[in-house]
Length: 294
Image (cartoon, rainbow, N blue to C red; front, side, top):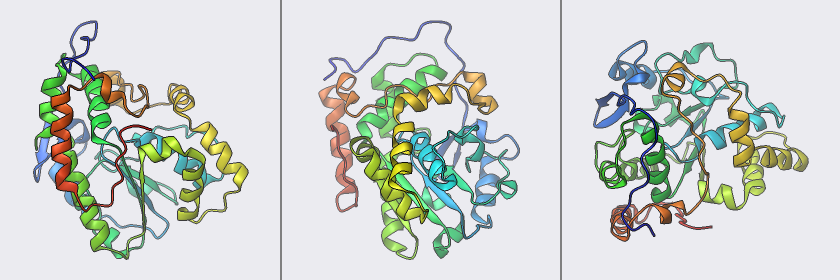
């Protein structure tokens, strides 16, 4: 367990802080407002026309979205080949992504809370994949991304923001509670609910289960190939050759760090860890199987 909840400051000149915008109590980076204000964009998303073969990947930031998006993309194409584009090119959150021109089947991804997704999702006409991760590792991963973008901040400051309602991307516990409420209240919506830790512990089994959920004809050999292609280190290498959106280039963001379970023990103090444990009490009764080690 960390002694002071801090890490070394990054070298080099501090970068400019990332501006944010708040909509309905959720905080988002302003980089998503390329073509219209975020409030207007959310309204546009809610009336978006969905297709019967659409799949939406939902996840709070730093929960394994890149990983599962690549796995799902391979299963939908039937090939263990990496996407040439990054997932940000089909990310619902950004106002400069025109979903209407994307070919079917659309494999869309988002960090938005379920309450901001298209109204037609409730009709049960699209499949939803939700990946979640234990909050302690989410926080640590978020911390290392923040210090790539903003001036150096100690972990205790980032931890404080994470526990608040003003965390960029919104409060994680609120996000999880809202998702669980939606799933239980809308049994007509097909949802594949999986944890980062389960994917890490049983990658091939997870790929097979996801293939069945998607209804794709995936042989055991293909599932094995997908699992092998989507190990953390292979995805990290494959991502280096992809052309990401402009904001990633501007801030030189690296989304892949360690991809481990339990790294929080090297960063959080006992007090910080216990605060997260206390916050998790509000999720009692939710269908989440949080694992802090594998």
